[in-house]
Image (cartoon, rainbow, N blue to C red; front, side):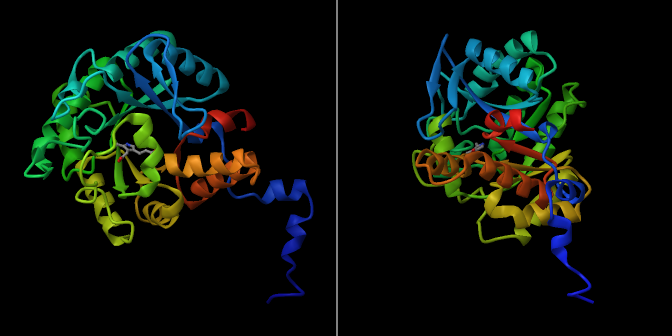
Amino acid sequence: MAFPQHRYRRLRRNEQIRNLVRETVLTKNDLVMPLFVRYGKGVRKPVESMPGNYQLSVDELVKECEMLYGKGVQSVLLFGIPDEKDEHGYVACRENGIVQQAIRAIKQVVPQLYIIADVCNCEYTTHGHCGTIVDGDVDNDLTLETLASQAVSMAEAGVDMIAPSDMMDGRVAALRNALDENDFSNIPIMSYSAKYASAFYGPFRDAAESAPQFGDRKTYQMDCANSREAIREIEADIEEGADIVMVKPALSYLDIICKAKAKYNVPVAAYNVSGEFSMVKAAAEKGWIDEKRMVMEILTSIKRAGADIIISYHTQDIIDEL
Ligand code: PBG
């Protein structure tokens, strides 16, 4: 039975009834703020392509974390920009590596802030690829070794959660084993399970100084045309011990988020990536859109699609509205 028995506009007549029937509500608890830490002191270097985001030295990062935690942000995702790079990304595994220093410093001042560390080699290799190069391509199994030692080193520094973003096969199992062997069985893994080779990462690569110096990431990140392959990746990661699976980017992949949520019983995270963020900022700077409304719509749509956790650079701007 349809019209005139049903009139859908009855439940849209005013703010109160719309509030009562709303299905999805974004809260502070849904959001994670990504932050970039670099060497130096007193440094707040703006990322040109990501307005409002900075490469922060450890001291500045700690201040930023205090401020964010004060506003109700409960979790941050850390990316490091080291002072030197090498062929394999060994600098990421050092006890006094930049992210390790950052974790220790934040935990001293804001211990309740939940710290997630991205685990990948691309910020730490001279060639900008996510692992060790053999014959012009990233070698999967060799890369697992550096990733595992990077993860253990982050855990030793006191990180709360590990998030591998490299897209090597078998990395969740490799990280889980390495963490467990080193008495870190209580540290969860949030795997970037369905991570696509995306043009939307452009601004991030400026921020993290991690653009590949030759070729692209298509031999390890997924083809944007594929959805069944995403399900295989997610399934494998869950079998290997992932506690949380992630879909990345978010907006062009809402269908993947939706499928992951419907099919599996693990929490699903979505990464609202740099390019998605910067498009909104650029349009807002031109006065073409209402930034706050658009950000609320974007983040709500990612949650509606099925994301339990949303990683977004908009977090710092929108947190006061929630
Ligand atoms: C590192 C990594 C990337 C992002 C998160 N971790 C970039 C890449 O794969 O090149 C992208 C995040 C963003 O665009 O906001 N592997």
